[in-house]
Amino acid sequence: MALMITDECTGCDACVDPCPNEAIAFGDPIFIINALLCTECVGTDEDPQCELVCPADCIIPNPDFVETPEQLQEKYDNIHS
Image (cartoon, rainbow, N blue to C red; front, side, top):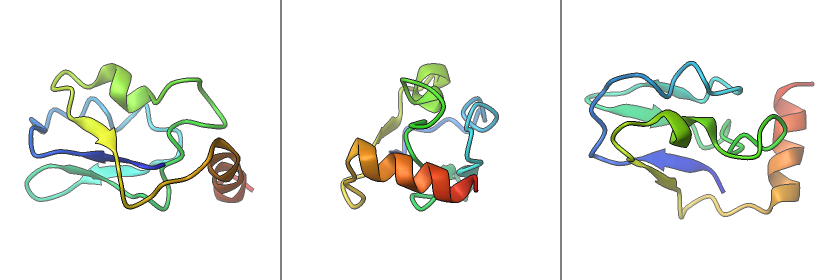
């Protein structure tokens, strides 16, 4: 499942650089995660890197994009092929 950023986002941008898929961008007024690019770091890391660095703890699963680890891996492979 892709991740999303809640309204508790402070706009610090700590989550942007660690994303291996460049799925995080500045929105108005908070950062947003492109669910079509988010693989929860499947393909690169065991844990979502954005969640690990977020000081506001505002990154949660996106209920609109439920995907299995296999689907996330396929998405990652397609993004990076």
